[in-house]
Length: 155
Image (cartoon, rainbow, N blue to C red; front, side):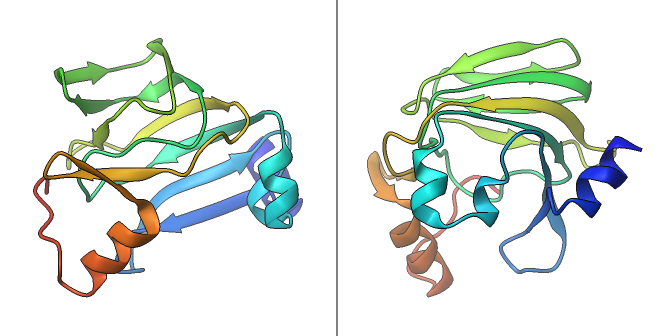
């Protein structure tokens, strides 16, 4: 019922895989629909709370985020790959991460994905990927990947 209401209110966003075919992440904005607002307004939001349904693994190299964030796994789970190793994140797992924390999420192909509450702070930087030990802005990385200039190492 809540998900239907959020969808009717325009608070549902489906983010597709890099080929634009399969849903990768379904995001429900519980407070502010920041991606649906003007970019400047979205950047100025001090925080937001979202419900995430992660359907597929991150298809790329390790990445960071533009804000501090916390996540609480509600149902399902995933493997989180960080520079420190690979860790299972299951129901009840709570984690706070800085904008500079690197990770990649893997969803088991035989699972039904993962539901989590996602809390984010204000945007404080651009986000990007680590490639050969070097940080690349997400637009540069994704553009180079699309043009075939980058080989993805974590698929």
